[in-house]
Image 1 (tube, rainbow, N blue to C red):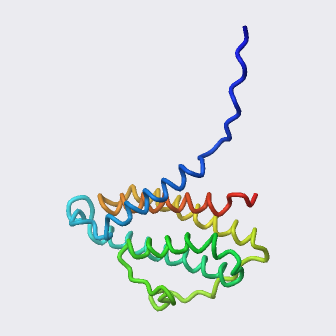
Image 2 (cartoon, rainbow, N blue to C red; image 1 turned 180 degrees about the vertical axis):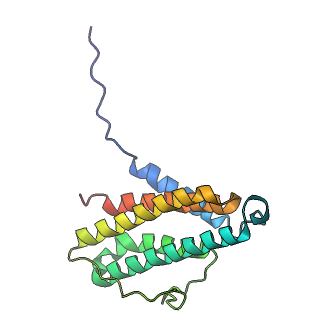
Image 3 (cartoon, rainbow, N blue to C red; image 1 turned 45 degrees about the vertical axis):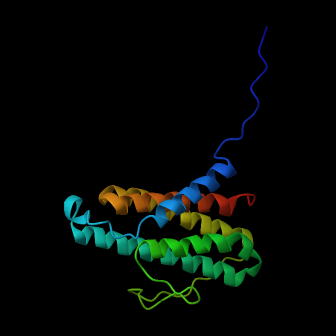
Length: 174
């Protein structure tokens, strides 16, 4: 007697598992101040660790600026995009930078860049944000191989959160 076919299970992660991983990543980010707890001297040179930390903070700040551009162009997306922007701000702080919530500190930027402009449609803006989050998550996943201990764990956690952000940004848009 033939068995009935198994029920169709959608491919990819479930929304709950992604949200749980983001929450878990936020907990990991909250556990570290990004200083590395003195491990820099044992597993890598302080200059490599410090450069990686500064780069990660700058990248997080850049993502926040992208969120700001989208929110300025499409205020209706605030409910959807606002919490993800808030997480990106926490990532900047986790990497040891201070952020004023109202106005991002642009003076730290090495070279001033033109203000970001959101694409013509909400769908395109969300797609560009998702692509930026995905690309940054990939860069961080590669970078964590070059740094020791706490910073590697922090990069892994924030990379996972960025991948979840990309998924959540595109959920229901395609």
